[in-house]
Image (tube, rainbow, N blue to C red; front, side, top):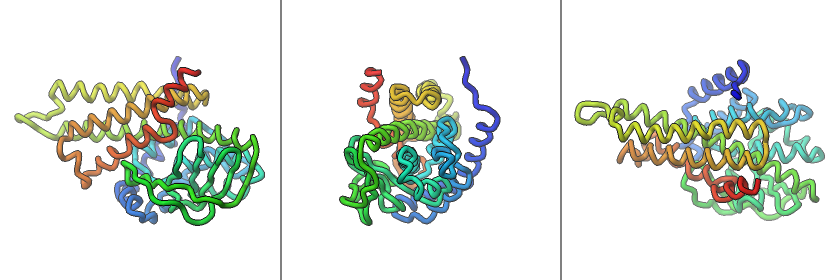
Length: 322
């Protein structure tokens, strides 16, 4: 059985690729890492204009409905171009709020249009929230309670990727909802966050592989490109195989949204991206360590994304449970 994108989906992916290719994302990433969110917010608004954030918002709140395949396409491109910010958390928060109509009407139309950057923390999944310093709203789920965190946030926590600005969630805030429906909605939001992080990881890995192939075809030793060496070919082939095995798992999870399928996609894409990062670093040699090289911006994303919203061990356990 073959699953192929239709013409509209393929054109959407190409449009998003063209937009991001013209956006100078390395500058955006470096600015975001230093706390300058202006270029990132400008890019966010442009992404909102393409409908990326509307893909996870119900039509009743000015969204496009819930379209998992289109979301997967979008987040592969966001990862491939290294877009910083709480892109996964915003979509997960939209999924959460979409299950709680009484608290959705204020935020979902703004999320769909790209006007609002929001982030989400779920105590059962992570002790931190991403980019609380730049978000217009920080939603926190603790047990069966959903709160809108008040102004401020905890200390900045270390991350291998400086563009992933992690904070301890602020205490207190406005209680928005309480009860078993909050737990159920949070579980759906966490599954979506895991799924979209898998798609983002796949994109990061594809970018790392592409940049490395370009490098080894230009770098020469003994008068020939190093890409002609058998050992280099084997290393790149291994990285490509891992990514291409992960790709159908990601899009298969988009079709089913079954927890086990999402976990399988997450572990496969995360591990494949991390393997591509290791191959890229080895084949670039010492230059791969330099922060001035744009490659470093993607190298530092692979491992944090592998562990975010479902570490490999937890995902494997979930697959076995399924």
